[in-house]
Length: 160
Image (cartoon, rainbow, N blue to C red; front, top):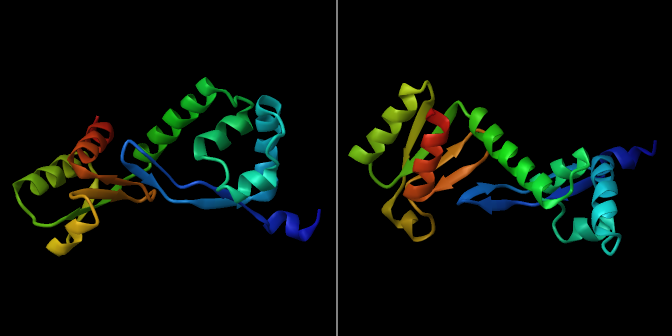
């Protein structure tokens, strides 16, 4: 095996779904080639693996579905649901960001802590509301949940 083959990286897209943000990352090129075989079987070879990498790579669910040999709409949807559940289950500490620590923030903290989840509250200057929606939660898997709707959905998933 060529040494560069094992260290060459392939892009995985950052994405936001249901106001949940996943940061971009990379995987070894050889793993992307395994996924590309299924992608090409289902979609054809109009895009080379290098072109896919240049446009930002596979999405997380595309990667999982491709490796499983399920690069179809239902296969990608199934992988996305599993990835979302995994992100929730692997979270045992969350960071809660707010402009002020009021009753609503205390309620969020209490709900999470009653479920055995540790919470770190960060109070931000009011000016940060110009560029970020508050409150927001960031869990250890790197996922951020912005705004009340997303925060409440996260709490329902993680505490049920």
